[in-house]
Length: 147
Image (cartoon, rainbow, N blue to C red; front, side, top):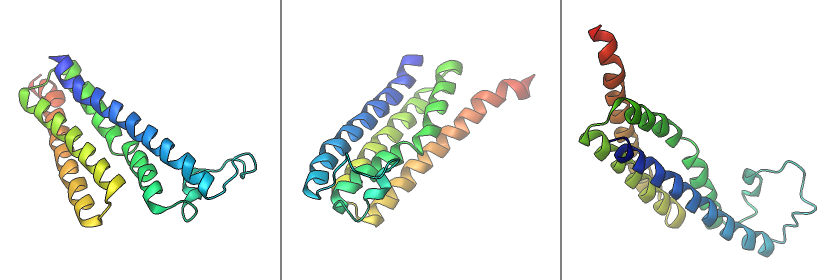
């Protein structure tokens, strides 16, 4: 059963790398159009420094990539807990739901980025993540409480 719960995490890792690639292939041409010379750029510059320099639609990919470095960091240890202690079919369904919602959220933010829908997707994903966290609490605390 560990492979079944690890698969959604592997897909989310792969999706994160897709977003990183998408960010990169849209950012570099935009830098050229904006005439940003990376050789003379301020040392230690960060992606946020490009706000207002590159078009919003280019930056949306960067914003989403950053988001994939945030909330999913809670998802990965939950998956590890289930891989070690055992996952139910429901846990696996929740994990896949979370990944699916994150992918839809990424596409929405990178392409359309209308806030009400993006917030709704984030809220739904958060609710699924909370459900996974509650399940992980039961899986980890039940043996302790039974002892």
